[in-house]
Image (cartoon, rainbow, N blue to C red; front, side, top):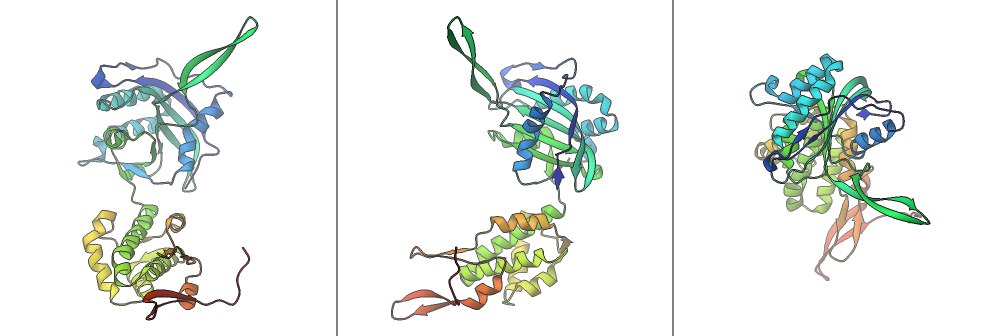
Length: 352
């Protein structure tokens, strides 16, 4: 979890990169930008807003041979070791970005490289480096008096409500490649920012493992439980899976299977399915890990707990109290109507 409320911009460098394949230039500012109290809060909101609004999926610098061959990892380490050098390093970072800007769809734009202090991540207060890029210019109107009339002047500029690309590199977990958050609003070339410029992989911490394992369970429920039984059992299976994660701090696969699999025949099917599909979710060799409660909450919010019937009727099952769906909802077959039915027991209707 991150907290950016107390973050302070200690230093800001602004440069511009063009598209190398179109022979557009690179512009490197000689000095850092002179921050003032008027623009500081606007820039903080511009830089941080996308990271507060999106799910926290962390990345880390990576390299197929050795982490020390990752240029951005080396630039970040250079800055964290000597923060006073950030402006000089910001030029290296911008040149590195320029070298990756050779796809014809990549737009030119301004690059902002900032040094932050008092950033909180996983309850640790650390420094951080921000690298941001604005690409899309917006039309806006200025007005000025001309005699007895107001004149409109059409200009272009950056919309402070939308950051096009950005990443925050936290001075945390250096040995793993630092913990990194990144956003990319303009996905015209998804590989440009993540793969070519940053060269990152997903950070495989407890948040990552919790989400990936539950996503795997969700696919198993859809592809195995649903065809073998019905929609109710698919929903109830995920109910039990979510609740097992919610009430435990550590995941242990054997205990999970014994509690969640009410039909023992599904246990070998689950293990075989994991052999086939586990690599897709990076869990093929995983049988235990710490559980991230925040990740469980995120997955619970995204799950659909509704049975949609072809008679335009919906039955919504409760994820918080799954025993109600098992005790008070029955499925059957009506021979006369030649239709399935759900029988729902209750004492009284609740007022909405």
